Every structure is written in C-alpha cells, then in structure tokens.
Amino acid sequence: NAGVTQTPKFRILKIGQSMTLQCTQDMNHNYMYWYRQDPGMGLKLIYYSVGAGITDKGEVPNGYNVSRSTTEDFPLRLELAAPSQTSVYFCASSYGGRGSTDTQYFGPGTRLTVL
Amino acid sequence: GDSVTQMEGPVTLSEEAFLTINCTYTATGYPSLFWYVQYPGEGLQLLLKATKADDKGSNKGFEATYRKETTSFHLEKGSVQVSDSAVYFCALTGGSYIPTFGRGTSLIVHP
Image (cartoon, rainbow over all chains, first blue to last red; front, side):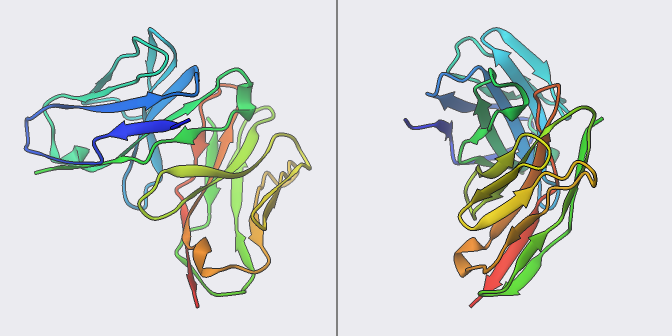
C-alpha cells in the first residue's frame, strides 16, 4: 500500500492565483482530513469528510474548498491565493469505523508559498 | 470543547538522557489519547496510543500512561538517541471522532 499520497510536494503561487492540492489514499478509509501546519502552531483542521459525498468545515475553512466524489480522493482547492495561506498542508485519513480509537495516517505534505 | 496542552519546546538533551514531554488534556467522556511523531520534512506518524484509563502505550522505547485522575498522558523514554530528534504531538479523539492536537514539542538530541 502506498498509504496517503499528496501532490505536489512544493508550489509557489502568486497572489490571486488558484490551485488544487491532490490527496489520495489506498487504504479504503472512510474519513479524510486536511490540515495546515504553521511554525509553532501545531495543526489546524481545514475540512474533513466522513465518506464520499460528505464534507464539513473544520477550524479554518475560509479561502478553501473541498470535494469528495470517491472514497480514495479528497482534493483541496485554494481560490484567490493570499500570503496568509503560505503553509505546509497535510492530508490524513482514518478508517472511521473504530470510533475514537482510530489512528490517523498522514501524507508527506505540500509546502505552499504565496508571494 | 476538547483541548490538549503540551510543554513548549524545544527540549534539548544529550544522547542517553531521560526524556519527559508533558501532555494534559480537557475532554468530556472517555477520549482516546495519542502521541504522533514528525521527523524533519515528513508527515506525522503514530508513535503510540492508549484507549482507556490506566492503559500504557509503548513503542520504540517510548511509553505513556493514560491517567484519568490527572488528565495527563506524558511521554517518556529512558535513553534518547540522536535519531529521536523530531517534533512530538499529543492528541486526543473524543465523541466527535475528530482529533484535537497539541501544538507540538520539538526535541533536539545532541551526540
């Protein structure tokens, strides 16, 4: 199993541009998540999904959109990029059937810079 | 709501020193508790977990005990190595099944 894969690894955007961060998991997990990690600030949840066709906002959803058309894929869309969105983005997944005991599996991250 | 507080870093140790990283939590009900580790340039990965009170999670020489009476889940290792240098995150998952993470503690181990 490849686990959770993310593309691209690095990206530089200009202010106002848009892009999609890709995330795919091959573990047949129901739950998927997008986080951003800023230095010294831990992880902030952007959006999450409990299954195909179901998404919900996390702590910091403004400026982002998601969709979940399949179990495997959970892309994150940035519209009108702003310098405040400069961060490292992590996608994660979990089985979702074991309640609170679920372990999260993380991708390697996408480092995004907005100039 | 749920919250996790862990000690601020960086924690700087010499090789073979004893490690403790403190973690306390606030949650309703009976959450599961986790420690994740993030090596430089990588995503987080599970280090250990405990799913009920008095459980001890262990892995790679690291241990943590779920203490409900003190709402704590402190991470310990008897003898750290340079390869343990990383950022360690304490986390909990409660009734919402959405994890809550601490801010992370950076560990630097010198030879």
